[in-house]
Image (cartoon, rainbow, N blue to C red):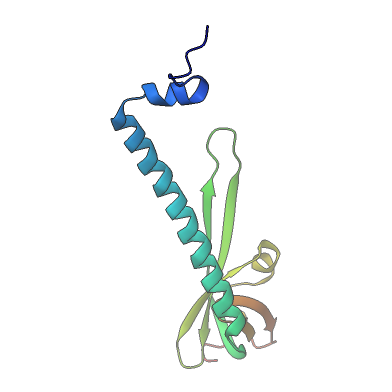
Length: 135
């Protein structure tokens, strides 16, 4: 015989969980959703800002390269981000994320023309001027 006044199935399970655990679980769920939304909004703002920026081409020198490795614990594989720092004629610098194939083709000390849009690397065209301390 079935008593229709009592919850059954999943709702019965939920009704037996103490209030503290319901609140704690709700807070964790809310926190995860908020962080997820912040990451999406920040990415969209950067993407929009880059798209609204003008494409700039400037003479520069490559002064540094670095990698950032993340992940890779247990069964998951590691990922690597690649960055190159460019120094312009006015001694200002800009570090840009580049793809792995671009990272391997550019060497510290290279002089050339950097094309970028906001924080987005577009292209680096090397010139034949090597070994010069001035741009």
